[in-house]
Length: 150
Image 1 (cartoon, rainbow, N blue to C red):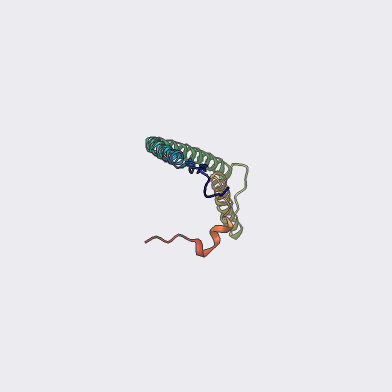
Image 2 (image 1 turned 30 degrees about the horizontal axis):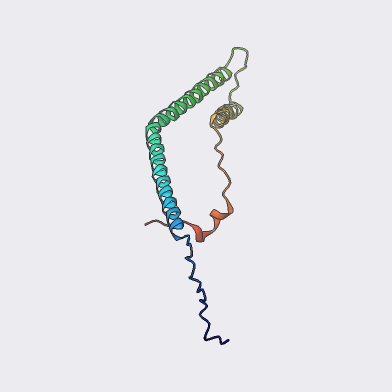
């Protein structure tokens, strides 16, 4: 038998259709962009509402700080007035103290107001609140990183 004489049909395999994931990936890609857009819109709305809240609360905060500052100033003035009255009662001459005339009296008269002024200065320092600043981070000390505005 000759191989040319054979009428046997040889089945030719048809190429199988490949299934691609391109349509599925396209849908997932579009869905992710839609969700990201929604997230950006929601974040913008949240930021805007926070900005509005800050604008509403800022005058109230200023008023509160003004009231606190006034209370501190009033307290300091009251303490100063109290120390002045105490200093004036200590400096008032009594009938029991002898009067001294001459250079010794002038030296004593000059020394007494200085002690009173030192006491007042010390009282003023005691009433002022000590301002504490946070330490400067090392990254802020680098001159290459300073912000320059025009």
